[in-house]
Length: 206
Image 1: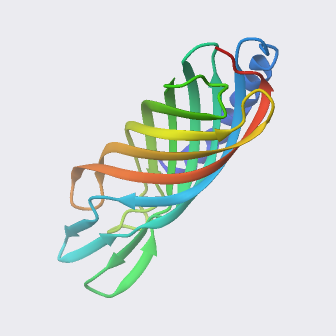
Image 2: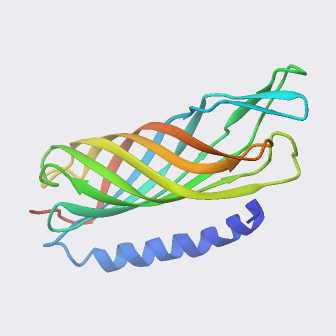
């Protein structure tokens, strides 16, 4: 799947998210809906790639995006996440740097380990993920899309019954087979982020 085809699906995903939010809002007595813009850092843990006589380093870069979270009436919730990272690379052979323009998307099942309406909470999450790169380190004209999974944990501060605004700290690990020019290799890329959660409708309750 190319970046152009992926971008063409974004309006449909946005429309689906709006419909889901509208549907969830009347359920005020059962659950809550949160929108969380976030910013953080993208950290590739397998950062050295070699092919065709070139050595590429995948560097740490900034990242940002948004999460739409649906909390149920118990311990479970569901979250859709989208994000972007420049995903910087450096060519040690010719001393040049560039970006691979990484798009992240995931759907995660959320498991709250404390009541979701508490002002301080802890949760685990996991689910499928999609990672799309606008260019290959060894071929700028070739984009690539990888399917994988994401696991993570996080903390919530604020929010709850009396406050629509809170904060979140998330650590995610994206697991996938990625081709950066030397063939498919297992990757696990980390994203650490801080977000501001905004209650859109409903009220989470036990």
